[in-house]
Length: 293
Image (cartoon, rainbow, N blue to C red; front, side, top):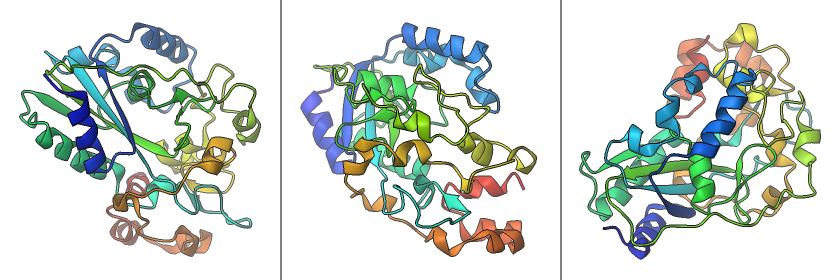
């Protein structure tokens, strides 16, 4: 059986800023809300979300024999997260300034699994968002934060500039976390007003068809259309959030910027070749965009 205090020490040592542990049980309410959202056509361009729905909302189906899910969050906020100065027309979301978070999170989660003596693949599965798992719902249940009006997990100290990772394990835990009772979005609707395309819905979900981040990350050039100054991703609904205004900058060196996006304007992107771009940004999330050129 896992010990909650041991988990806390291991997560902190690996560089996580917040964490919790929840039972590996079916998330029936979250699954119902997702199904309605999907049937209303809000997931256009995110076809992978429509696959493995049962596994996504039940970790014991994703990893047979699972008893617990350890959820971790780490901040990536940097000095450009709250916005660029002037009218720079090729903004890049701040999570893409550093080493690909999939790589960083997997390394951190493996460290935790090793420390907890559950690194055996028969005992634990490492998950980031490329694995079908309802991580935002799990993060809420783990007490990491609440689901904000912009559909993201918001922590009262860290804000929403966080990435999430999980360890699904066959081990039970002596103490499980409780959801955070706080809802810091009550009375605030800045993100809804700030979204340049009206993609944020009033039920704390979004219409991916309209989302600038979906267009610039998931879609090919033919679908980009007007991106409101964003080249990769979009952070309009985060940079206006009062919780992010007071959140500290990241402290985990894995999320230090590898380049300054202000050095790459529209003239650069108009001239650079795919191979050159892939070479320059090979270890960052930005490389994903060039595969669609």
